Structures are given as structure tokens and as C-alpha cells.
Amino acid sequence: MAQPPEVRDKAFAKFVLPEVEVLLRVAMTLTAQPADAEDLVQETLLRAYRAIGRFDGEHPRAWLLTIMRRAEINRHRRRTPRLLDDPDADLDRLSSVGVAESPEELVLGESFDAVVGAALAALPDKHQQVVRLVDIGGLSYGEAAEVLDVPEGTVMSRLHRARKRIRTHLVAAGLAPKKWSRT
Image (cartoon, rainbow, N blue to C red; front, side):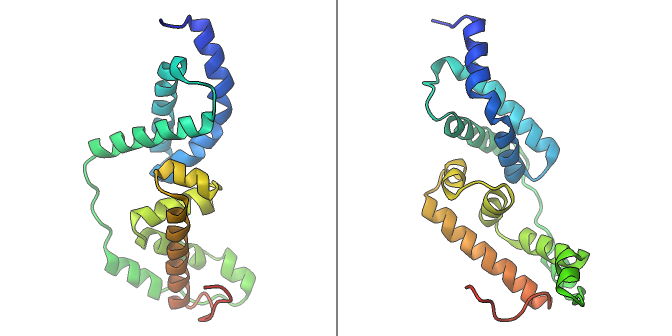
């Protein structure tokens, strides 16, 4: 039996609307393009609105992130495959970056951002997603695991490997010491 629109609207306002900001942050990490992220959030909200009558009211964030993950999978299937970036161009960009004179200039300088951006772009998609969700998006390991539909340990492992590769790029560009205090 279908719910009256007032009941559906009330449930949507109670369970879904408070999570819109989180949905947008997660969508940005999944798509990396603001327009695509907004489209993904809109698709998620539409699906949630249609299904709100079947929602039990427990764990709305997990429910919405599951909807988003499935919407992104479907969206990804419909897209044409993107071409791979030229790895030689990334290496040329990394080798042309100079060393900053002070730690402040190093972190705030454009060269640091360029190297980190190139290092992030050079990561496999599964590692990029984890970095974007946890380090950039601020999600917990558990929330990122839910979004990606993988175990929490997999998120931790991918994040460790991704950070290690980014550090390697920084060292190669002369923007970080060869020895790090952490591994």
C-alpha cells in the first residue's frame, strides 16, 4: 500500500535531508567533477524519495550511501571508458618541479600542489577513491568501506599504499626528505 505524500515527505525530511551535505562530499570523491557529483546526489535523492516507504528508519546514512554507490555503479556502466592519461607527461611535470626554500613555501607553493595532484592522478582508481573519501572527504574507514562496498581493512590497506606512493612522488620531486618518520 502506497503511503500518502505527507507521510513520505515527512520521512524524507527526517531521514534524508540531514544527510545531503555528506552525500555531496562523498559524491565529489566518487566523481571528482562538481557537475557529476550534483547529478549523482540528485539521482540518489530521487531513488531515496521513491523508496522511503520501504525504509525502516535505521541507519539512514548507510542506506543513502548504498543507494549512491549503486547509482554510481549504474552511471559508470553507461559512460564510455575514459582514455588513460599520458604517464610520460606526468613524469615530465614531476621532474620540472623545483624545491621550495622554506617549509612554508614548500607546503603552500604551487609546485607542491602540482606534485600531489600528479601523484594522486597516477594512483589506480581504487586508491584514488579511498584517498578522496578518507583524506579529502573526511569519512571514517567504516563509512568509506560502506561507500565502496569493501571490508574496512581493505580501505586501510589501500589508503596506506596510496599515501606511500604519494610520498614516493614527493621524494622524487625533491619536495620531501628521503626518509620519513612513518612508513
